Image (cartoon, rainbow, N blue to C red):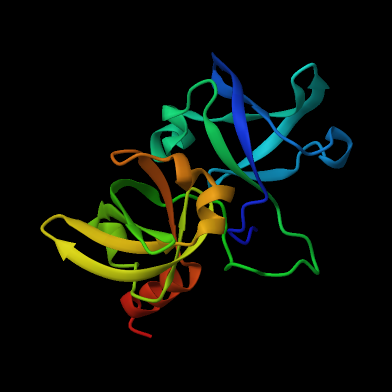
Length: 204
């Protein structure tokens, strides 16, 4: 489990496509503090550490991504040099600064618009209506691994548009500050919304 609070921005250093796709991601964490088999949220995608080390370019870890992961997330879009939001799995006793995040991406949305708003930025995203029914005003959503609060939601034909406000700290400490309009982003809906919907479908 994760909290949606990004700990650092890593970078894709190597992509190997043989069977599953293996990503080598440069990071700041000391390799000795990364456990083999540990889970790390990479742009919101829960990936398992299969190798780690340090070279002349600094610390790194490797993780495998299946064809299903590439199809259901934006990991298939990653290129060498791509900045990636990183968050290690939450440990017992850690502060829950964001909201409970599973690292299981529900779908891919698109950054539709960026506009300055005071010292902050207002970002508008689009998602499918299927995912949009789980996104609520003042509710939580995870975008590329970042826990964010939804400001407004509007259903438009076959899509849902929703906006979030990005404060300066989040703008500079995550990849949102370098993400351009038209980019595909990973979306994870609030766990609570899933359970509420399931209970409603069951007539509870």
